[in-house]
Length: 118
Image 1 (cartoon, helix red, strand yellow):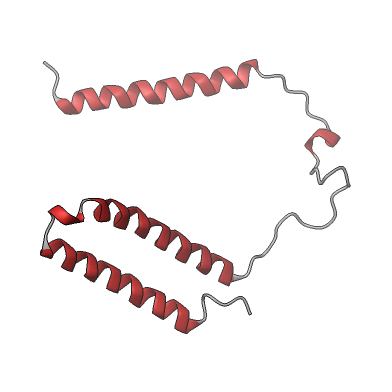
Image 2 (cartoon, helix red, strand yellow):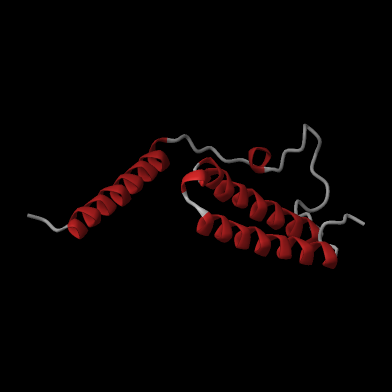
């Protein structure tokens, strides 16, 4: 009888093998006729001008990270709110501490000006 790790290892080997076979088959079977116009950058039918690299302000990245942080917070708070009646006071205290830490992070970001676009 195989151990649990052997089964997982077998699944990993099968998954990697399947991915390799599919990628190799796609490379072999797809048509490949490269030419300059096909490989050029396309901008709504207009010839490309300038560099395709756009430097974004660091505020955008900070704002995006804060959005992701509070979006993930909702993923933790919503299921807790659904079953909160049966968990008692310790769970309420723990959620209060969790929200307080997040509020401190929001206050810090707000104070540093991470939420303003000016």
